[in-house]
Image (cartoon, rainbow, N blue to C red; front, side, top):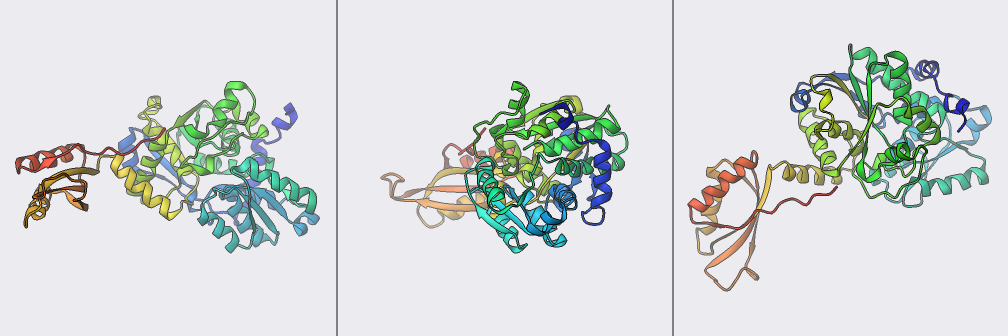
Length: 416
């Protein structure tokens, strides 16, 4: 990457992109959240990019790129490899602008995103285990069919479009101290970094990526984009094995700090946003809050911080699992086994004891076959909703007080 190529996106390009896409892309709210401020110790403002028509910030770059196509490319069409959000954005704005769109999605792309792309009229092809492998087929179709490839995070027009979100945040949050940005291929943080550092260099730019797909941190360590081996992550929109070369060069000098977050924190952040913001945000979009919850940004306590909630396209089934698991991690759903009388009234006494503490039974299952030789007693497995870990301890003591033998509580499985 030459110095000229690396500097090919400027604040002027971002300002021009903003004017170009005006009216075609939503100006999303950036609101103060008292609840999130209370739990993080910061003055938290949230940029609600998941409220875009297709559920992510990707619309900004997609429309900016499509509007600059030459006439022949506008007629022949475009192609991209994407796990979902870039594909959705191209499909929506391609339909709106009359540009044929083909997207190649990896096999693990969320089904809800695949279906939505087809609904929007895009030609959808499924290929490879990640974006890099999907791009191999896309590159072949560029050669075979003469399509124009629009890179989801490395094209100059995409980066400039992404940067428009920062212009809005700077206008909407006076005296901003820091902005936390999700990092996948680095296009968003490149655009945000350019806009922020050119407008107010004192604002701290923090990048956050899933620990299981920390390709930006690896590029910083080695000084150049390098393909890494990834593990599956809840932040599937950030699962990019190698950051873009242009995006990296533009971002590396404009990002003050990069941290990685584990799956448990991403999951917990999704739950906090559902409860405290009343918003459904995908794993990638929840990573900025996960970064604040990690405890690694203590220097931002008391500071005015903006979180870019970049997307909300989460599979409903995944969301249900995430919420239940997060409630368990949070100590609000507990699972335990207990031995009770198998005579009439035994189960009723257990239920009454649980109810007397204010806890709520979610599920009870009997285990008679492997419960032991005493046929007068039976082991039951229970899932109970409680307020917190202290409430769970109170429940356990109450059952022991009734002579109900409680076995060790089951802790939720955790992953790094």
